[in-house]
Image (cartoon, rainbow, N blue to C red; front, side):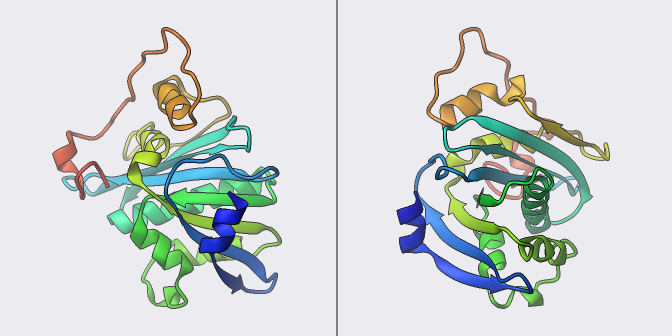
Length: 213
């Protein structure tokens, strides 16, 4: 994984701590290198109500669940929902004191905003907070990942109700996403683990994009 990231990476330097942020494109799900944590992140928005949530899940180099989170954002754009997912992922990793973090998003737009030298031109209320966190004394890497390899983050983003003002964190996989996580991490699902993913939004057609925002 380190070699792949190195070959495909572009290095950015940010602010006073010269934090190193590497960006790459990942073609399949993999555990992070030893000593790293990987956080898959996503945001969802209902195009009927305009309400959005975000969520994500972190695992270590042994594909073990470290934490998951979900947050009600309120009314915002699809792009902003994806950026909120990035912010919450970075903020959670920092609060838990992980020194080396790889974040994966299936939003090419959000990914390109983060790695772009023109990102200051983007009108986003959460973007300055993302870059402030990234400028601290740690190493952060970003990767764009296929949507089919980001299912656990998409499922996590649906575990809070819109307009609930809720933020939740899990240190064990929630039953609603356990099988999705085990499948994505190429692990074996336990028997009788059949609880479906809870979805608080209407049918797929209500999302900004096919398959969800």
